[in-house]
View: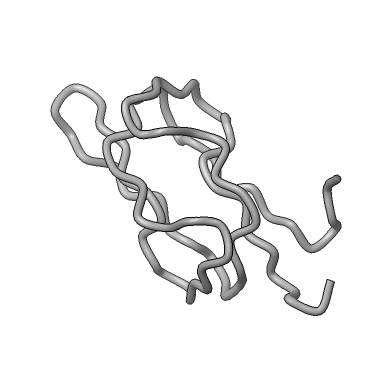
Length: 80
């Protein structure tokens, strides 16, 4: 179930999920790199925009994601 306080951090381009740096339950601060995508030998970091708790990581390392696919879901209001 989606909570209004949930924020999806999405892939900016078609890429391979190279590294996942967080798991469900982890607390992140703004600027925390939660995942690293790889496309055409370039590394693309996916960063948290605000503080919160990771509620879901719907991808796996090695998976190909399309532009706009959610990579990590963060709950920005832990009280929710």
